[in-house]
Length: 41
Image 1 (cartoon, rainbow, N blue to C red):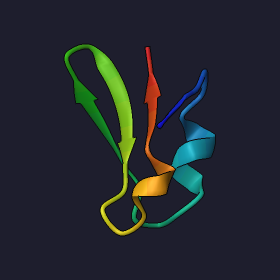
Image 2: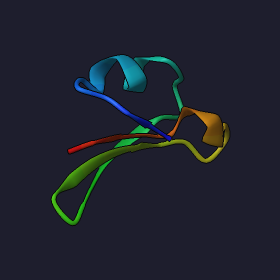
Image 3: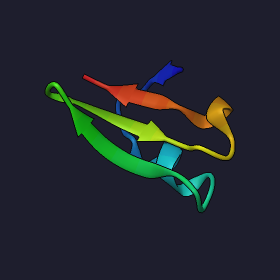
Image 4: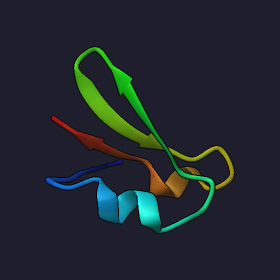
């Protein structure tokens, strides 16, 4: 998982990426390609 300043670039990498908020953190998750996980905060 990458920790990034901006998740917009992480979200654009794949059409299956979704942005999710959990416990005050913003995550990008991808069921099809888990390599593209990212976190902010």
